[in-house]
Image 1 (spheres, rainbow, N blue to C red):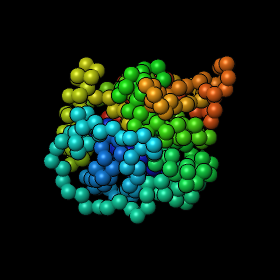
Image 2: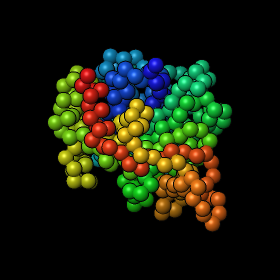
Image 3: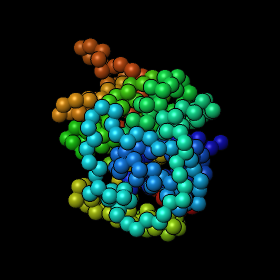
Image 4: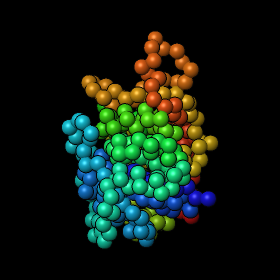
Length: 314
């Protein structure tokens, strides 16, 4: 039985890698893409989601979603990391498809009503679409099979501020709603994504196997890897969003802990994810509200990237 997934995304170089991965994996059914601002503006995110599926020869519904944070003023898109086009500033072919009539939040609500208990939401960008879907239909928490969020950092510090990971910082109020909702949720953050690297030789093999899509992936990778050479001193890039997919398919590669999450929404620590382990005693209960979640804290990073390559070169 394949795993039905709605993939909530802001493509984005590492999003594009993860999109290629879920389209290539025969064990995953891509029910649809929902798009959000984040790495790029919302129109570019939607264009990229449509384009990537077309390059793979697939017809996957795309629902356009959040164009801005729920509360805060948005920061400029990080075009020095992903390029102004989100894919490394390359000449991209035109897109033929169009997004569906429903908004991203409406699409999530409708598809989970149609298939209650079946669909996993994999969210790899800011969390406004999931937060809005919860507002539209609070019973959504009882219909999803699981929510997998690529975001946050428990022990590793931030990547866009000293405290905060990019997806959570981009819309901390949405993240606070999503990470404390009482639904089955796994957080896949920088604690594990920074243990993975796609090296140049590995990317070249993936690109050769992926045809027209592979050409776009390889060119965007080159731009992204240049950022990582300066930021982390590595030869390659961290495939952050693909690690969330790796958890979905191979959770045995991860070490996780159950507990409660909360998000700082204001001040210098805006976007900080706080984790209170289950059973730990604190002076009061403010850090142990909402639902119990699973937080990934360690990973066999080489095995995870080996699996990614095996799917993308099969």
